[in-house]
Length: 428
Image (cartoon, rainbow, N blue to C red):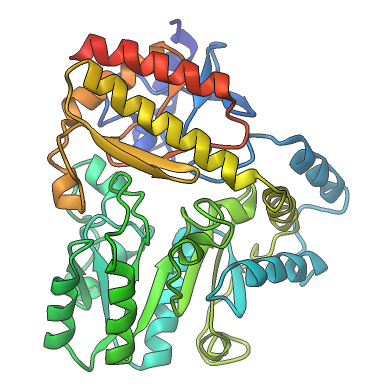
């Protein structure tokens, strides 16, 4: 596999940008070797600057659920471009996408659009505190809610990938009110509430973890959190930036039948353009300026191009059979990966839900971030390189979920399983 142009461009990038990238995990630090620089994407595929083609299981880290550069999304964007790229003023497209989100997501009665998942989580934290008059927050080890100071405590994802338990530059006073518990450990949450009965504003979590690898909730875990937050007058927040419109049209809360008070979203609702959102019960959202006193603003929020891409993407996802196809193909991929590892005599555990999957190179089961850290990251690095050489692009970290799309064909799944079979045999 020739990657000479990627190597030259990355060498130049390292003199221009910190680490040569604009988001840390892209630098391949945890898997070693040379990062691949993309040139274009289409459907289930990505091409690098050297002309190599890959079956892509990152999908821009989740938004490309219909496939990259879907022709209907692109056509809608062409039409929107003719009207301008940014308004900085209200537009009808905001109403349309807001109504689609409200109709789909059980917890959302009102929504505010922002520009990223990080921005949505920053705003929702402020809103939790404003509504309850309390300062403390419970988050879960390995759950990532963006790079805002108050969330960079046992944050998984890129922080774990780089081996940074927290981040320099975050003052202890900022995170003093952030309490942490192991994911899937309801007793630990009960203890935190018992020790802080009147000071916890709420609990935020990824209802299905995607930033410590793929970790689904235990039976009763989400229901238990709902009961606890109700009991103590705290708010329950689902960070559905990854899971929203991906594991079900109404997100994880629709899939599992547990309705939080507030929800953060992103990725899919932008159809590949930068978008975030937060929403919830109308009485809580009424706190947000200008309706209420809690200030939050953004010049590019509700950007017409992002709204257009999101509207078209959700329209495509409402077509009959979409989620059944995503479920079936992703499950077949996940089962094939595990069978291939087992055939090579390697320990593995993993699972999938709809268009999201993951695996760990250890016996398992993996129920939280601490258990995820027992996975063989050295062997994963070798696997990642072997898969690249066979034309399959996986997340360059053992602590990230994988994503499928409607564009992944049965042949793509077959080719991917074959590549895993060959790669596992090499690294065993």
